[in-house]
Length: 274
Ligand code: GLN
Image (tube, rainbow, N blue to C red; front, side, top):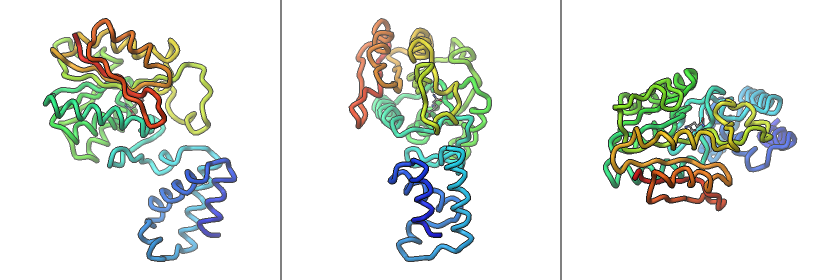
């Protein structure tokens, strides 16, 4: 048994080769404390380490649990966030949203941000870590909020990112005003067939009614009440949803911009309250 034969267990189970190699690397680092540097130096893995790796790979192939849930962490914008099946695993695409938010916050020296559907808190924490803004993250799930709180501790940004249980704006007070509202809401149309791995993620973080547009509509409808003058609203978008979301925003928002991801998909929309 060696790394190659163990990697083959993953590819035989239908996991794409590059992905399989990355996953083996992640599992080796996490469970066997064996790094890329060790590999370069030619350090040999012990039988115990290889056995442990094989056990973890078998969990992966038998359950189809995403590797991030197996190790309990996900990498996002330079930090390792705690994740469990109670929260969505942060995605690379979300970086486009967060980078744009950080640019705007820095340029305009914004102070208060509301992150709706914060989940693991990856958006709230990354903004708090990289700007002077204080971020309030809200989520309907208490289990998700517990993870978000752990992530605040991990990133040592206590008091800069704070969390509250709230169904969208239900527990956000009318006198609380924000310079920016940001959200990566559930946006997969109900009924969409999911990849096996994604089925382990919380359904309430994934699916939305109204062809995936439900939360964009609800968040946009009330956003102006909670925004300061010239405040911003920004969303991550699901595939093909830019047009619908833009329509919701056009009544109350100006300077609307859309950013495409590397695959050319319209991935982020933002605008300024009128
Ligand atoms: N805000 C979190 C993220 O972007 C969770 C999003 C969600 O659960 N829909 O990863």
